[in-house]
Length: 524
Image (tube, rainbow, N blue to C red; front, side):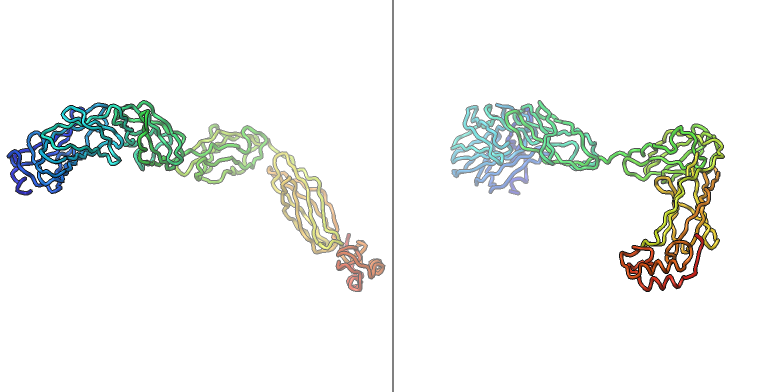
């Protein structure tokens, strides 16, 4: 073979013709002398052109070439296989010639196998312009036919006017496969083609559930089909494919492609709202606590700047970059209108400027708090849980209550002043357990936010000793007689006053406890 191709002086082109004047060729080489024999031994020859590819494989022992084609000098049956990729497979119409070549032989049977056709497509083989055979491309894209001994013939293979070829699988997706940062309402597009040149309806599918996204109808051969896919979620992966139909039959589905949508755009924080004190209210305490509702629709961390002064709009920034949704402006002046505004910032630098709010503080206030409904509750001496006292009261004020105290004078004369807690209903309370028996004097002292004060009248209550059976403040014979009269009785714990130790039995121990305090007394 090396000797044959060393001095190449002539190229013979066996043309495989397609429409629109485009051809691809098989370049076979000889040394410039006609009818030179080539021993090919099943070798394959290919073109060296950049845009087209074709090859021939011949299983004969001897083959000759001339300027019109090739011919066989062997008496054996042979097979010639032509393979080619046409540059434009979509342009052939019914009756168009898609392959043309010449061949001659003097003996034997020649089989032709030609590849590169859409499976299932029918073609007419013409020999010297006369219909010679009808063939159908098999699943591998081959058409095959044979011819007995002849001299020289030209073979033309044309598209069968009675056949229909399915459209090709769509290609060239947009968005490209594995694309990212795609819109949540993308336009999907593919390129489509049909061997018969038919117009097509192209349907796009969601590969997740095979539901139809949309159909682009009447797309021309070689054109681009597109549909819109709306309502997608942010930061989500989607997959899709497309199928083209020429109105008679649908082609193969395209590959399945995927893309990922863009991240959700950042939203600014919520507009600060629901101010307290309410916008435009009057008679506000001179020591108010400002508060508002905030947050962020994306769940971002939010900080706040607070502007507060007596001018509108407020320009004095009193707080900066705070996470709390409240602000204490301190002690204010009476009968003054204040303006305030909150600016919210999220962690990505987006901001939301709130409305301007205002309130007016109470006029000069000299009215003291009002104290009412003082009440003392305590455990019963016959209660097994003896030993607790509870003081409650109600305090109201024309501006606001600042603090409430209760002052006790104990049986031994000592005094104590303790803060009362505010209940959810606005009342105040103090719970304790006193260890001294006897009378307690107490009064409630209240202060409002304008430093006005008030005190309740002094009231009293008595913590009775368990050994003082008749609660007269003295342990004497009357107490011992009362115990003796119940001696031997029994009941539940704390069932009767004479059961001094509250164990459910009146016995010697009760008499012993009372006797040990005989003569003791306290003020009631």
